[in-house]
Image (cartoon, rainbow, N blue to C red; front, side):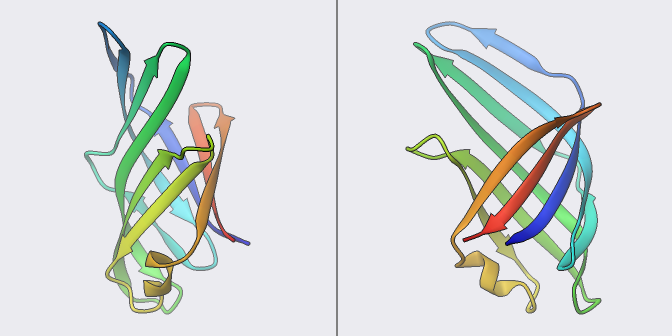
Length: 124
């Protein structure tokens, strides 16, 4: 079941190449679902790393908005490439209504958009 959709606008990027290639991709955007609506706070970044044909990402950001009960809250999301190549998010939130997401089995799917990506987070 889809629990959250995050609309990401990419703000450029910075790359360094040595034994690996690492790119930091700052971004902004917003999230919307039946559980939460809000915006990505400043400081969001996706770290993309390539090494000998393998690729990993680690995106970290905080959303600020309202939960399904209309209460103000924040949600920290860390999306990382798992051992199986699947993108696995972890969540920390101060929302009582969404607290169960901190312990839920979650996965993400990323698709391109005109100015960035769309991140869909699912439970299951």
